[in-house]
Image (cartoon, rainbow, N blue to C red; front, side, top):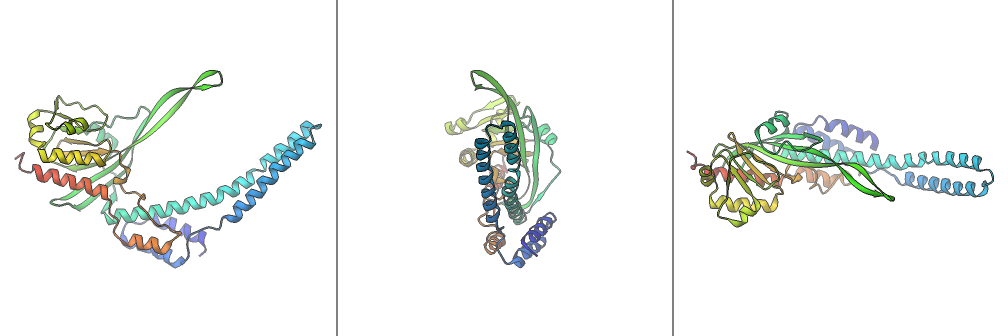
Length: 334
């Protein structure tokens, strides 16, 4: 198979990968090709450059020499400008081919990461469910939706074996802004896109407490302040009653939350109805390809990278934080 056929075969194959064995079949295709997955694009760029230069120079010549026959020269120049579509196509073709290779290697890496960490795609969690059970999911005056949902099973933390739902919540705010256009003021519509990421786990050791470093309203009656000035500057604690908050927020947990806030942005913990929902703005907690070092341009190194265990460090840190909270409060609410 040539490079194009191999790329197309990989593209079809990765859509059906659900196990390590099926991923290994994909890696065998990469091994069989025995060459870097690199298109020879120089000829496209060279031809495009010559065509663009020729068209531009010929346009200048026409407009200069045919100035007495303005309509004819204008029509001919317009026709040559239309011909620019050819070099534009020749430039876009290699760019699109390279984008397809990037997509395939990113997808392979992400699949391997999910398999290494016992993560599967999941459809049991919905925006309606999150909005009905937790605060902070009515954002986006133009659009909001769940983009990705996963489940991680059998995560062995320090003390407990955990199962968790993971999600990417996307929302769009629509606004109007003014700007200067010439001597007047114009308005335009702007769409601001945001992503929030989250984890939901079972948590029966406390309830009706929200520890929040994010910007959203929490409709619980009591506001609780700890003895830590550092903690109070970072988090707001809302609860059903202060006694429950006092029992939960032991000094060791207060320090632990302070440390977590150094690494995770806009962090919030919502303990509601025997569940814990953690929200944050760090995209690299969910499966992603950001940590990939190699790709199909270096197939041997890429395969070696995939054969190792790809740990999602920040996800492990948050799940171990859940484990720590459970172990610290296990006897508090019995």
